[in-house]
Length: 432
Picture (tube, rainbow, N blue to C red):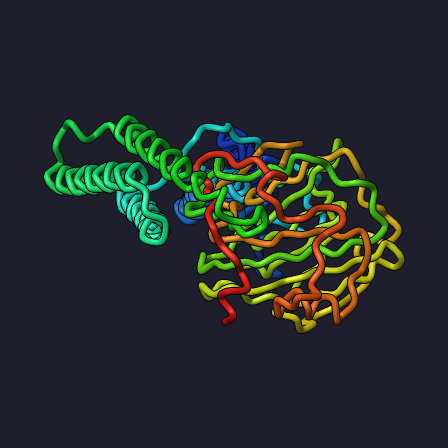
């Protein structure tokens, strides 16, 4: 009896130690440890035999404690990793918030960005910036060559003098670019202020664009008002053209134009029409690696156009509000059609029509990554669906081709901003 009491005493003592040790390590709920005992053996004696020395049991407890601590450390590391990944995902989502989707989220496909005149709305390295400058200079040279051709056909001392002055300005800009390259290679401290350097070059290019545009305006008296093209040489958030009047309410429409671009990825936004409360009332856009899309009241139809080969292409899109039926034509041939594109939703009036930029707000909120890059001509809009024959006449430059009854392509109908240029052009000459 006395031995049994001593055994019970040791058993209770060991269990108390285990419980106290477990709670001190914050293991949570306590557990009882069971040990198998031979059938004919006294339970108290077995407990004494197994518990009094305590080496094996202590070793087991220590292993369990170590395992729990390792698991806690692993969980903490995983939580930290999750927090880092969540932070990175949030940043990525905020940067890609402008990506077009089926709903488009009204006019807010991206976080509102400032209207600072930059060569783009994303951070660019020296190589990207120099590439942009190189393309700008090439565009200016092309425009000067056109002016030289015009001067040969229409000799003018003043025009030649201004042409020489502009050529010298381009040479100076090329020297600045070369100096910038050398400075970047040598790591000169004087060229480390990227924003200031870039601002000076942007200012020079804007001034040069304006002077060339002024010279090109001198040709207006020698050409019909519809024989011109718009050129958007760079992907910026400040080059665009604004149509002077709004569109009427329309239950059907046809929009046609000539486009030339080799921009990649995506040619950008040839035009966008925004109304109060809806920035995506009527938009044509090819953004990133997505196909070209037509948006009506934020509803989307994918268009089967392939036009970024650097050649002129004539495109037309027709639409009627009844069942939202649409058709897409490239170079006079229907390439695709569909329905259920904003059915029974008329195009609203009192909006703003912009060429070359996508609007996220009424008349603004431009995103450089969605800007059109290339040339545009003969942009016309009708308030009805043109027939296949009428569209073919436009694409083949037939004498029977009509002009838009809602908007027709005239220099006096648009205002140009930010260095986009207008100069003599007749799209149909490209077919001869």
